[in-house]
Image 1 (cartoon, helix red, strand yellow):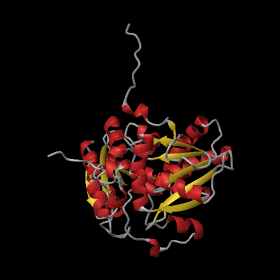
Image 2 (cartoon, helix red, strand yellow):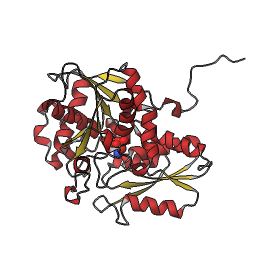
Image 3 (tube, rainbow, N blue to C red):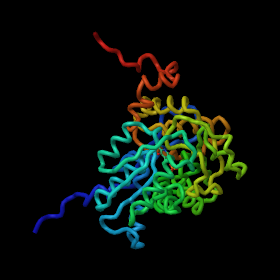
Length: 344
Ligand code: PMP
């Protein structure tokens, strides 16, 4: 009789239950206590592991997915990685349509995880046949028996966070959380978390983050989709050029917009002050916290949870590259001592 060993049955058992880590330096001088929920601790290094596992297992429960079937999705990279990971373990094929805005690192990672990848032009309208939404729809139609995850218009995206992220934050803070700050792309993370937390305590404030060049903040304030708000920007995964039904705008109290440049610098500062090596939208979250603090959102009794969506390794050719920062015109504000010196 073998003794029971301490091991997981597969990598999927490590999804969720990510840690809260106190922010000590980057929020210095701000009123309140700030904690980061670091989603890079998921095995696929992002918050999207949660929705990939939840949506696939829900499709299995409903008898929609059978072994050998195909999963199709549009993705800025993270959802694709998580879907590819779950597909390997569960025996599905995975086809992904990705925006050309996504970093080459992300595209290579998806290939490495066995997915078939289609890179689609970023600067086209959502209803253009070349957009990653339309390409994914076509691939779904061309592959009988495939399941289209459709994270922007799938209520299971919200439900995944309602069942996991929300309860985790409530438990980890012993119900003392006063604010949650998060970026919204599909809106699933913030909406699902908000739904659970507001059911426990309707006074928890839900603070959204949008990008300049995206329609979400204005839609939240006016319920009007304004195409004049749309223009190209750099941050991947934050904001949108359409209104996702995976966002419950009624649950979000307010939004701020953050710039590409300030978010890029905050991403680097987060690594250098807290040693949390996170993605570009994590820097956006820290930048947003500063803007919310400036606007008087927090006081001494605030317990603010910042959801940091993914890992820094996905951005080596972007925010963590001096060359990339220089090309964007962001380099001026990089500290001299953090530049690389080459000894000849
Ligand atoms: N950050 C990154 C890096 C992302 O990929 C996403 C997802 N598009 C988000 C933030 C936003 O999360 P959500 O889609 O749940 O709103």
